[in-house]
Image (cartoon, rainbow, N blue to C red):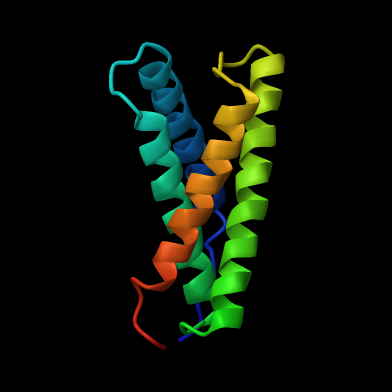
Length: 122
């Protein structure tokens, strides 16, 4: 069975990500839910990890885990750059610091690696 993304799903996925980001920013900014940002980055990293594992049909070998870790770091850095851009453009006010950004990338990467252990071997 061939897996592919249906074209109408791409804008839906992007709008969903922006909605989740807005909720995360609002909740994190007012401290309504303590450490909600960490939880969101962990889930985001796990989602990326599961996507990579399923896309490439990886098992739990060390090269596969390292590749998933690399993808988690790369996407985490891209996400932090995205947060910086929307903050400087004035679209959303994202509370940022170097420590927060590094913590977010690290937590997302940990989530991506953990995802490799939550899947069955293909």
